[in-house]
Image (cartoon, rainbow, N blue to C red; front, side):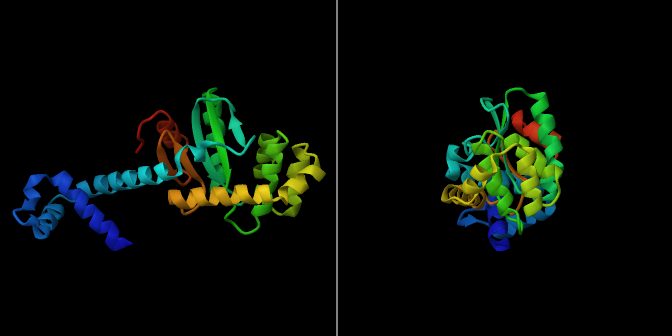
Length: 230
């Protein structure tokens, strides 16, 4: 993987360095290497450009489907025109800390729809993700989502407590959580995450930008505004 990345960087360097890096017989690797050694400040820019290009290719593979939520699994304005997609896990501490940023973004923009994709990657979190989908089906997703993150670990007691706090019909919720439909939705989200190249949670899509990690309010706001943030 590292070899492929360096090869791609080398190819990208040609475009940055210009025609002077080419010989009559093709790419002059020695001259390219020398130029890069003499101008190392371009490497971070090249790496960022390469990552953006690769992200766009992956995003095109998932298409618009990734931004279409499981019915009800949204925060903010369900009819909002500006969309932030968040891949999250209730056992993820970084996801929990990012909840403040998401709440702040929603408060600042009444046209923001936050599509939550339940990506249960931590041990013990799948039951919480399944119950979250059950809450979405009952129109109580936001209440369950908030109670789940406020309640600590997503163990059986925590999931039941959050479900009661959200006012779920427990019999209906338990039946749906155990259903093939819930399993299929979790599998679908996992496939989206793998296609996008996410290594963990949280993961984000904002205005065509694929972002990984707890990057904070400013970075997410900049992406939603269609700009890059340092």
